[in-house]
Length: 104
Image: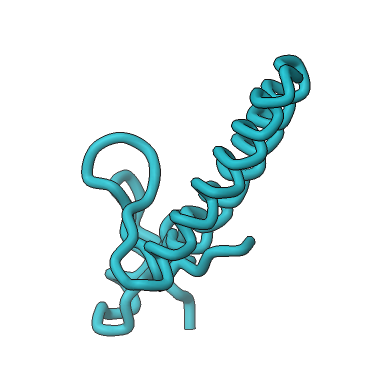
């Protein structure tokens, strides 16, 4: 992963990230350069197939990197069941259909 999650925020609509600091903006500008400059140079040399292969490979790398950033932005305990310590012991083990109690 080249970008850092601290440089971006999740988009409100759709999939992706939005830069929130100068590092994020420079990361985005570098990716534009990596995508566009070689593509234009290859097109200028009349290498259409190579330019399309470059564009596809570079876009794949960008999507992979953005996906890694989004994964790093996800909270670690998003899918974890958490039982708070403020509940009593019987409340901790109570479920919708059952009431588990500790034997002592």
